[in-house]
Image (cartoon, rainbow, N blue to C red; front, top):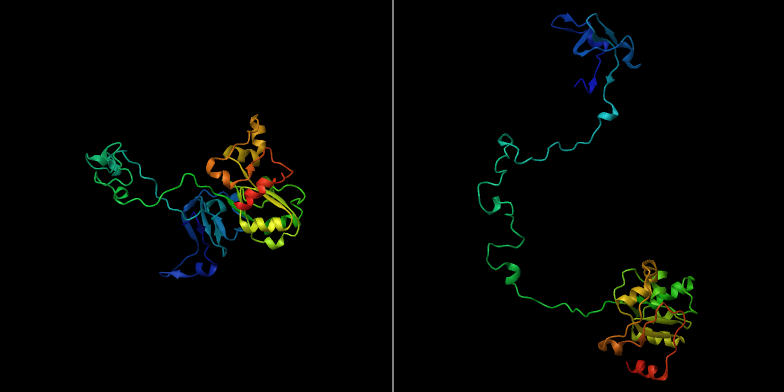
Length: 283
């Protein structure tokens, strides 16, 4: 295409003869109205001349390309979107490919997913299996080894009370905490000093390791609102609300916790009484 590239024949090809007649110049009828100042510098005067009729005659040995950067584009499909209901000439007019009458030809004729024409669908023919406990609790685990590493790195002060907010702020646990934190015994041999923690649940191994080092672990209860107030107290300040009062645990969880959670996040541990120690040892 002339729009893309103009190839100039060399002088050796110009001198050749076709049909016994030598070709002295190549004149392209579609290249018209070329003004001499608009010719590029690479196309010198020996390569092109203008005849009296305004056409350009190419004689040079150089090749000049009309391809420019603004003509470059990806090889993308040029198929346009089908426009329905725009006349019979398009092939998708009148009924717009839906055919005549019937449920699928109406305005709301699309069938819902799983509809089988009125018979009992497959999702109702298959029996149910299992159930989902609405009272289940999901606790995020954290090991003693990770807490020991954070203490050695200076991110956690072992002399103060370590709460679930402390674990969240230091990165010991993730941000998506549902119902609380469970203290695990992984890396229990790294605990060499007394630490005091307040978590939702604790395993037997983790509790024994902390108490052997001279520390304490207290299982505290927070409901959904209280847990949000513990982790994000600034949310209540932004809304101009007061922190909620600590809620009591339900009857089924009273034997699984040691005390009610305190708000805002405490900094000093509560010592266990003699009765609480007996209950914790029995549990």
